[in-house]
Image (cartoon, rainbow, N blue to C red; front, side, top):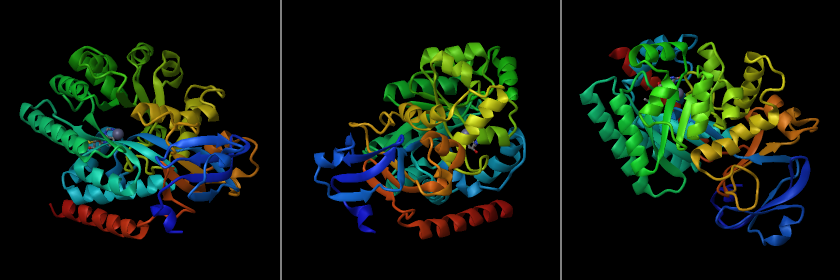
Length: 434
Ligand SMILES: CSC[C@H]1O[C@@H](n2cnc3c(O)ncnc32)[C@H](O)[C@@H]1O
Ligand SMILES: [Zn+2]
């Protein structure tokens, strides 16, 4: 069994169910899908064969908004409004974070993501050089941004600029094709217009993405209008932050004109339904307006302190149900669209390929257990994937043709669980002593 994690070469997933048909998936030595279809096995002399019977294949899932190392804060502070939750609980604890905490927290996040079918994620946090170490070792893809917060202070802005430049240089120097850098202005309420403009210009100069929180709460909108005389999306746009390389998380309180603006700018809007419901932000992302505008609507979990899980199979269900409930429409966000949100739209947002099971695409593939109760009967793969299954149905995960999990085994799991639990306990201890 262990060989499968280290073996390199061509691969065949034989006789697997894709959209109701039984097919083979042939994968070349570069980790790309060479062919998919009834006779794809004839096209390669595979070095590795994975039995696809009793498996349903779907494209690897993409988490477009998270703070991975916040796995260490899972369950630390629940059931509070966002502003108090951040200022009274989360930020005081984060003041005691170390690079090692971020390393183990991100390893734990990667483990959890792999176990629930995620192959790529968009992260914003601190000590991101250590997050890069974790991602490198775990084998998935990530876009990493240092969370830029200047609170309108010039001195702090200079420090945030330095930290952002350092991370981007670090990630570029690693030359790992699975890891990209992004610029991460936290939000319009924590970053000055000067800070936002610098982030936009630097991202443009470096040809990298912008990852930002947008219109999560009504307070964010009213405060922004009071301070700057315009709504958050307009403010971000005037600072140059809305581009086709922007991922804007939440987008709950956008009005119709702001949705059109995101569409015109080609922005990716990351829907985070579980976090939004838990923090009771009191409005669901206007998916119908964003979809009509042409914006790329994708899916994210947010961090583990507000979700409290990184399971995108669960998140697809939350998204499909929340949209129907909030906008009073049984037909809004059907299962197939929820799957696309978590796969092709996410891959487009992060630039990781088409996010589909097609020849020429990277072999980012998830095999679900077709014999699990959630897949019986299998009338409709998308329906079971979104409405019945959760991450527990994920059996095997491939990223660029490399096996990250097989038959639910991820190499190194015991050490990660032990070290992350110890890091979380020590972090809370340090905060208590302070
Ligand atoms: C500057 S790094 C990211 C920063 O964001 C905080 N955070 C986590 N979840 C949320 C959320 O839902 N809205 C706003 N900010 C959030 C996280 O704790 C870090 O401090
Ligand atoms: Zn967030």
